[in-house]
Image 1 (cartoon, protein in one colour):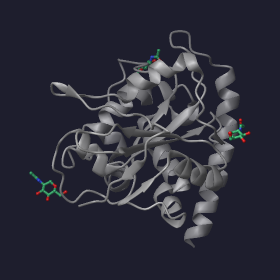
Image 2 (cartoon, rainbow, N blue to C red; image 1 turned 180 degrees about the vertical axis):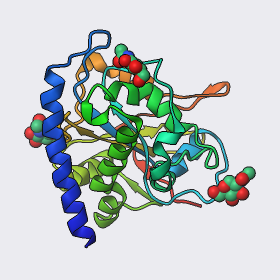
Image 3 (cartoon, rainbow, N blue to C red; image 1 turned 180 degrees about the horizontal axis):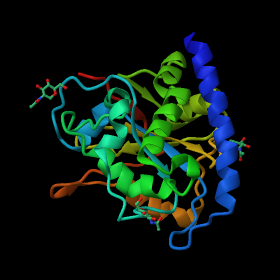
Length: 250
Ligand SMILES: *[C@@H]1O[C@H](CO)[C@@H](O)[C@H](O)[C@H]1NC(C)=O
Ligand SMILES: *[C@@H]1O[C@H](CO)[C@@H](O)[C@H](O)[C@H]1NC(C)=O
Ligand SMILES: *[C@@H]1O[C@H](CO)[C@@H](O)[C@H](O)[C@H]1NC(C)=O
C-alpha cells in the first residue's frame, strides 16, 4: 500500500515536472537572474547545534531538510510574505522532516526559506504557492531518503570518513555528484565535521550533478554562511585532504 502510494506520487511528480518546464519556457522573469537548478539541502542536526554553540535536546538522529533552494537567485519577491495558514495541513511532516533545529517550538526557518528561496522557486508553476513549495520539498526529501541511503551504505555517525567515501556512496545510490559541506576543524580537533549534503535537481525534478560553475561559487558560499553572534562558524565544501567526522547524537 505504502509503496504503491509512493509510486503514484512519483508519477504525478514527473507529469508535473514536464508541465512545469513547458510552462516555464514561456514565462521568463525579467528582474531576477534565471536559475537552472534546484538544490535540496539536508543538514545534520548535531552539527547545526554545534555551529550555533547551542545545547540542543531531543534533536533528530536523521538528516533533516534545510531548504529547497534555487541557484543564482535569492529574495525574489519581497511583497510575498510567508503565510503560516497555507501550510497548516502539512505541519506534522514539516515539524518532523524540516524542523528548525535551533528553535523547535517556534520555527523561524520556514519563513526564512520561503522569503529567501521559495519566492524564487515560485517562478515554476509547480512551486508557485507556499503550499506547493513546502510540499515539494517534503516530497523530494522522501524520494531521496538520504538518511537511510547513508545508513545502508555503511556511513554511520560516530565514524570518520574521507570525502570521496561519502561522495561515492551518493554517486552509487543516486547516480549524481552531491555537494558536501563541513565545518573546519575547531580547536583541538583533527577532523572537519560533516554538516550539510546538497542533492541537485533540474527544473523537471530529475536528479542532476551539483557541479557548480566557478563564477557561481561565491554566491553559494554566501548562502550557506551564517552570522552567529560575534564569530562566524561557516560551512565550506569539505576539504578532500582532511578526514570528515560524522558526529553522533549525544
Ligand atoms: C509577488 O508576490 C505577490 C503576492 O503573491 C504577487 O501578487 C506579485 O505578482 C509577485 N510579483 C512578482 C514580480 O512576481
Ligand atoms: C519545546 O519543545 C520541546 C520538545 O520539542 C519540549 O521539551 C520543551 O518543553 C518545549 N519548550 C517550550 C518552552 O515549550
Ligand atoms: C555527473 O558526474 C558523474 C561523475 O563525475 C559523471 O560520470 C556524469 O556523467 C555526470 N552527469 C552529468 C549529467 O553530467
